[in-house]
Each structure stands twice: as C-alpha cells, then as structure tokens.
Image 1 (cartoon, rainbow, N blue to C red):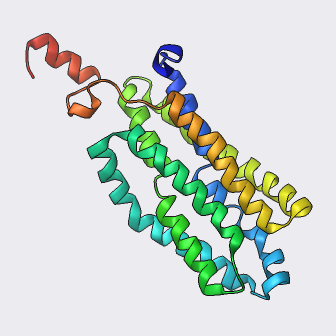
Image 2 (image 1 turned 90 degrees about the vertical axis):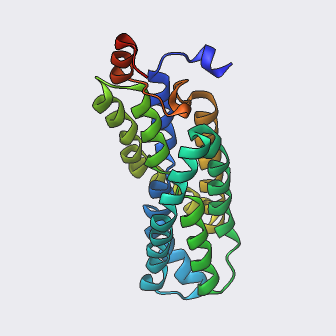
Length: 215
C-alpha cells in the first residue's frame, strides 16, 4: 500500500529526513544540557555527573552500531528499523522514571545508547544510497539535513516541556515524539529496491551487467 501511494524514490529521502529529525543525537545528546538544572535541583547531581551520562550513551551506541549494521545486512532495513524505533522511543521515555540514583540514571542512558544505535544515519543512509546513483549526494544531503533540523527544533520542544510540565514529562514527550515521527516515516516511506536483499546490483552497474548478459 505504501509503495503504491509513495512510489517515487524521493519519498524515501523525505521519510529518512523525517526520521533523522528524531535521531538519537538530537533527542538524547543535544538535549541533555537542558536537564542539568532540573536534575541538580531534584537530586543534587552536578553538571559533570549528568554530562557523563551522555558520554556513556555515545560509547554504548558506538559499540552497538556494527551489530545493527549486521542485522540490517541480514534481515533488511525496514524489518530492523521498525522495532528499533519502538525500542529507542521506549528507552527515552523510560528515563522519566529515574530514581535518586546516579548509577540507574547512567544505566538508563547506556540502554538508550544500545537501543538507539539504529535510530541514526546508518540504516537510512544505506536505504537512500541503494535507490540513488547519479543524484546520491543530493539525496544523502537532504537526508542528513534532518539531523541539523532536529538539533535546532528538538531542544526548543524539550525546553517547552521542561518549563511547563517538568523534566520527567519532557523525557516522556521526547520518547513519544520519536515514536510518532519516526515509526510512520519508516512504515510508509522506507523500503529497499527489490534486488537489494538478494545482494545483486541495483544501480548503474547492475544495468551494465544486464546489458552484457552477465550476472
């Protein structure tokens, strides 16, 4: 159904760009500084301790990304990204239940690093690159622009939630936003060319091989 309604390949770029708005970077790392003051007021944690949680998330994400790439190679982009979006959104919302324990807070951030590893450029860039050859640079540039837009918009959204509802509601709101933006974007727009999962060429080189009778 989604393929029929959004058959043009530029819809894939649009969907990938939307998902990048709520990538792990804009949602977790770029907003962390906004939570330092409310966390300090409630728990007494200093800036260095809160900031360390972001570093832990980044480290665990870096460790996990190769495994996500392997899963995508084996099972396909959309099959892996749909559950990853749900898990990533849930892990962000789970931070809202943080007790007065710095260890638990950092553990929750480590979980977001692991589960959010796939909610980043890897799968979306792979998908877009599979559809584009001569205009691949433009397509990838539009896709990655979503991260910049997210870096500009998500902190504003977060500050509004913190100011009006508190930091716990803000993490719930970030998790919900990730889900309602990224999940429909992946479900409706993200798909691979028909030959991508077979490992056969899908771009200009594939057409050349077909013309010569190879492959």
